[in-house]
Amino acid sequence: MENSFSPKVSILMNCYNGEKFLTEAIDSALKQTYINFEIVFWDNASTDNTANLVKSYTDPRFKYYRGEKNVKLYHARNFALEKCTGELIAFLDIDDLWREDKLEKQIPLFKNEKVGIVFSDTLFLKDGKIIHQYFHSKKPHRGKCFNQLIKDYFLSLETVVVRKKCFDDWKEGFDERFNHIGDSEMFTRMAYHWELDYIDEPLGVWRVHSTSLSYQNQQGFYQETELMIKKYEEIIPDFKTKHRHEIAELKKQVAIWKSKLFLLKKDRINSIKEVVPFLFSLKALILFFLSLLPYQLSIYLIKKRDLA
Image (cartoon, rainbow, N blue to C red; front, side, top):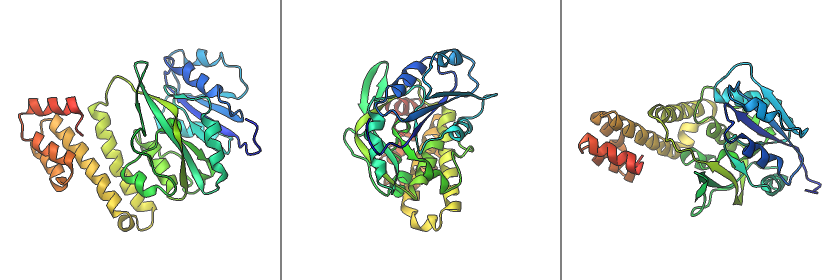
């Protein structure tokens, strides 16, 4: 793309045993019509054929790094982040895809020096078929979005491009205490200081895997959400008072997660205790009534309808 505004972009890719979809993801990055980029590929000590596959790429913009040992996801993301030399950083996991004009569409929005994050719509792909467009009915927020991201996080990682300066505000990259919500925690934290902008087109593809989240993963989500609230209370001035409504909404979501998990464990009493303070919410009310049904029926309905 011929443009006087052409900042270098670092495309951050993390991989662990990703040979199944790996080449599709890399190819979608290399085919970008915006050409001033590097791919920083961090191999988290894969044991499959990843290393041999990436050695076939000779494009000088493709930079391959391999960790000595396998580490947790956000530890690996920070390793990759240290290798990024661009003014902007984009994120592409190895099972996701980009439209070829993604960066070309997004980069011009960074001319506005208040904008720290640019994202777009995305498509959900399952078994080779597009099953959903993320923002097909409700458009996301723009501008100052910290409040909205706390209570209703709406960024999809494969669409996000951030200004590297955003990391300077907190002197921190990905918080390595997290295993599940490290991306959303970091982008939400960035939004405290920076504006967001948006391309109203699906520029990415998020691949939906056939297996659902395990009990352990769901438990991890609510535990880490509680940790995020505690963290923000410590690092953001007057967070408890200025953002009490958003905190209340987030705590309601956590309670609904917990209620569902207690019910799946056949712990009716604790399931009810979690949702009683939030019976004004339809999901909480449904879970309350489900907890009164025979366990076999309530568990069947939860799994069938994904009510939480």
